[in-house]
Image (cartoon, rainbow, N blue to C red; front, top):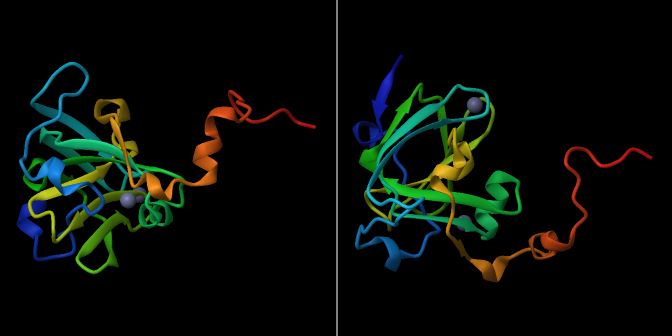
Length: 173
Ligand SMILES: [Zn+2]
Ligand SMILES: [Zn+2]
């Protein structure tokens, strides 16, 4: 198995920084407390098809769901959850990763095979990487605590609480 430290390939296809999170909250590099504990965490994740696997070993600085149009479009979803780590805390195995510059200085990475949205980096956030919470094997480990860019909240998300709920598929006619 190929193991590539993201820092080691910064000049290559995997150089990226997260973009959407509020700068004030993370520039001090203070960790957020999750699940009753603070400090480093170890966790694994990957894309849907398994071509990309990753692990993290370090503090979660911030975790939030983002309503911004860029995140929504990149994932094809009404919300995207992000957990922020030091770039050095992320190790990517089998880096079948493709990168898309969604705006100047911003790099979004996804599996080149199945398209799962994985990482987000931006020039204005040096040394930090956002990882999609749902790409973790246990997303609750990095459960978002905040919502960001709520000015872009969609009608779908606003209506969620009142929608009929079905445990699986809706009843057949
Ligand atoms: Zn994949
Ligand atoms: Zn966003």
